[in-house]
Image 1 (cartoon, rainbow over the protein chains, first blue to last red):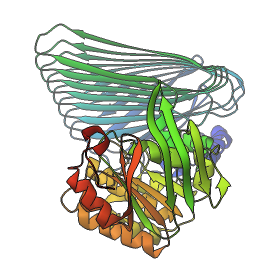
Image 2: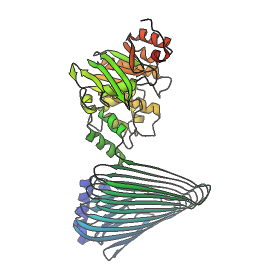
Image 3: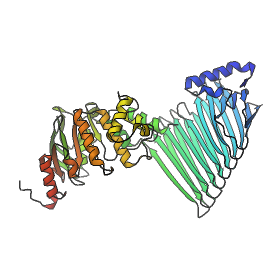
Image 4: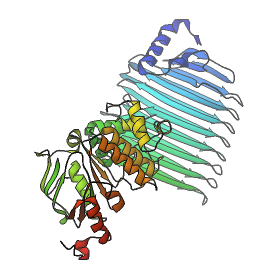
Length: 316
Length: 239
């Protein structure tokens, strides 16, 4: 890993936060393809065979292109680390990711804003997945109390390609979160979009997951879980469009509410092909009474039982 | 001793249980036998504190526990195997059995109880207690959970439902283990073969106890009633 000499302290600070949060610090090793961003600077960059990351510092942020060669199979994930170590400010990051044919890669994206009190983060990612490739993109966040975040990911999944997108913000404040993930699928392509979010106090969460099943036999599974406590607000929209022959889509949203939280879920299924099949499943409300009582019958208090159930629901 | 004294339970203007009297002595095994809709599960819920009786009392060692909630009763050593165990997304079998690490047991204990219910630890410890498990697997895990708790009183509501043809042997193993650790078993069933495995039985029908005694005798009576309610069918029991 090449670290900018004048940014070593920031780099070390990020590594320390990874340790404190129980994140994998081996991701900073030389075998890992990575880009390390702090504020509007690229402080570390590492390429490995088959992976080319080109970064550019732009106003208030960073733009990076990631290109994966055809037939690349990596034993380790590609590490995208975006940090902001001040307590206020604005940052935007733009990722343009192209995966060649028949490749198999995993991205681990970490957004590290532990001290944020009044901070706005905007992220935009465009991901193109070549024919027969399989991509997993996991997005995990470490937030301070005051993060306003807008994240938009657009994915094009080529023929027989597979994309799994996982977003998780369960251990820290969501505060003000707008999350949008859209996938367009070609023939026999498969996607799974999974979001797990815990909102507390006066947090405001908006999640939108969309799948356009364009190619024949394309499949999509969109799943959102939101736990909303206190005065938090959450709005979840899951959309699936059955456009191609024999496409299948399933959208699922589960929201658990406690206190004065205000949540809503809107599944939108639209079919423009009589061979397409779309389904949805939603639950919204308190923690399931039977689940609670059965744990309480083993000696847990209601709070302990709820904690265990929520831990499971938010498991990554 | 766990006692139901003059317990009546009504809901929506309908009497589900009427003047139920039952006594469960320490270390013994009991069955509450009766057809579907007899009120057996309602008795289980009243014993566990899931619902409160409209009239009457629940006593534990002469202490009135009628107003105690589920957790408080569990802490006193009473537990219930639900007829349909709930599913838990994202919780592994091991986490579930150890109650997220709150139960003071080790891996050897977990392994042991899974073995008794016929589930190899290595294959199941990391599986989730969710819809990926079959009904039979889920039931076995629930039984393992009861064994691990080593309660003073285990109320088992239809423990054989959802299980395959080896259910009878499994129930034998469960009862054997619970007897060994001194647990009083209260087994709720509509199967006479399962009821026969216990020391004493109550035949419940139409919300009333219509017969009580040694299990063999009560089961014989139940068989003659063809599993139906003599109160509803007008059968004379000759007593």
